[in-house]
Length: 296
Image 1 (cartoon, rainbow, N blue to C red):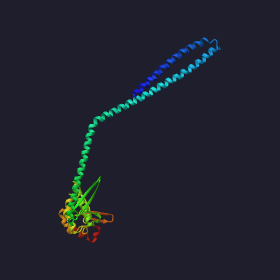
Image 2: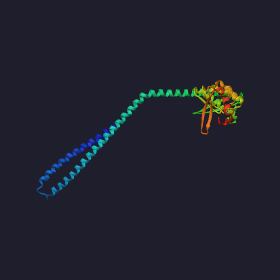
Image 3: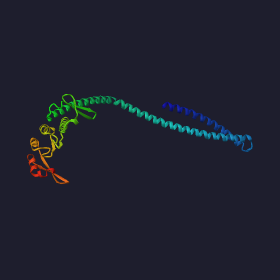
Image 4: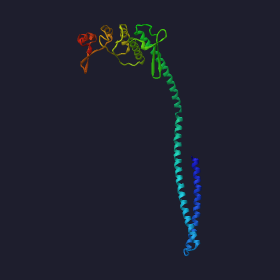
């Protein structure tokens, strides 16, 4: 760009110089013609003078055109100066970016190394968590299910952000989850929840609606002994008394019960929580609400 501007200025300078020289010549000629015209004012009909007047008019017209050309050249030079200034500004900005890039190249390379190490760590962490979750789920199933050795292996497969869990029997065959009974499906869901809570290492309350709804007596006992006491520091159950939790089952759970409430239905649009002593929950329910059991 600089070279182009230099050549352009030199061309304009030469053209401008030639035009000025030509203008000086024409002005000299014009002065001579004017003298001749002044001397010839007394003889207006002289054909030589008439020819000189025409020549003068032509020269004046050429001078006007040359002045216009000079003005156009000055404008072109101004535009080229603006282009040069813009180009120099762009060159300066690009130079600054190049310098900044060189200064941060080391940081970028170090960041790339750290990203690779972090990705490798995440991959190892996922593998460790996968194996640990498999162990936790299988442990939970062994504790909760009365069919021992029914499930021998649990595979946790991670696909991006999704997790798929496969169950295998002792013959190494994959068990379809929809082939499990309702109680077994709930046992599997319970073991999965227990494994996720164990692996999360986050303390949070667990809310369970309709506990032991589909469990037989042996499964319900395993749930009370092994699941509820260990799933979290705070577990909130919402059972239908005598339907989803019997007096015998509640008695096994009682040492772990901190507070107990009955949901009292006041009218079709409103209910309230009524606190009662944990030991007296079943008896209080039977004494006060047996006649309206469907409302509680």
